[in-house]
Length: 329
Image 1: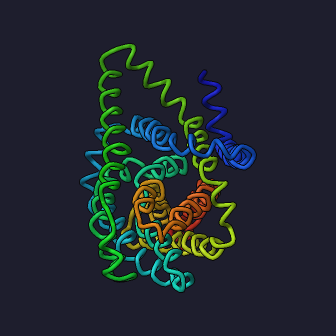
Image 2: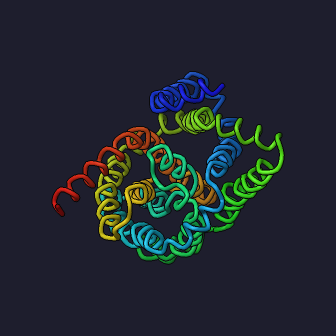
């Protein structure tokens, strides 16, 4: 079993690409799978996050809360720099309010779930990012209506229901976190707890593959049918990712964070909360029927970007650190 886990971890990036392709093929060749796949997203994502949280010792989470420089940096990146970037890039689709609303919903909300997984894969500080997740979730719940008020207008803000945010927080953060804590406690005291912990941690790569495949299979048909209307949103998402990498790296450098923390800042700045905001967007009035697909399009773009970034970001930031040390010497 251990040899299989090592093999999967070594080849995880091509395995994730394979999962994306298989999910797309399933969704396109058998459109009937889209509904059950969509229903499966939250349970599968919850399992993935349970495995992710299980791999982070809870004692280190407590230490991470005391890292005020990291927390301050991640808040500035996500709630000061990101809104400026999003406002500028959203001008590309500002002529269409439905496209604009979809883009704003997804890009203004920092990810609090699978970003932790990708950060860990890239050698980033996933424990510190996990500690920041509740603060990021609360921040976006409070600030999203304000940003939408500024960028869209007061009439639109009145139709937003924040209940899906609370539900997602409980199901995707609190429940997996409590389950992981109880499992760690059992592993410290019982043999069966150790076995459960080892099996779940060994299943990280398959769980990530399943999550990617399910998300893509659930949404690829709808995106394909409306591709013409969604085309302008794609460059906005690609440009956002491209801009946030250097901004996140510079923010980490200014804050004098270590390399794992800088990688975590970059991933947090790039990765958005698409799976959590999707229920919010689905609850909008009928006039915004296309908005959920605008959000899902970002998910598809982001998943491809993340598969690339788990290899690119470690090399990019490592090279940057080497240059900084050379210049300081």
